[in-house]
Length: 72
Image (cartoon, rainbow, N blue to C red; front, top):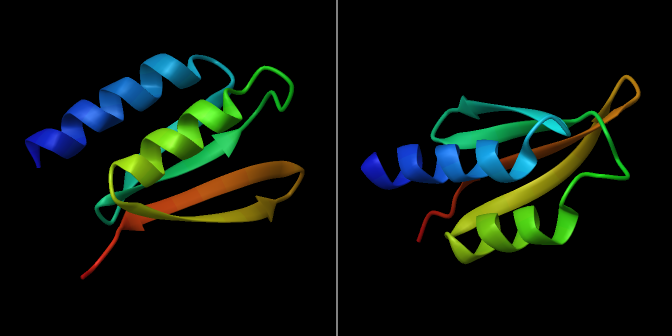
């Protein structure tokens, strides 16, 4: 859990005000607010390198990134 708390803080710092991020069932739900300034590659790399599976969806007019820890 400590690793996820640290990852959550890192995500919040890197995302800044370009998106909203919340913890969701051991993973993260990121709702992108500013498509142009959002650090896409950095966030996808961080999640994937941390062992998370990632999905992309669209809610209303916002792109949503959903992630959860990969189960082996």
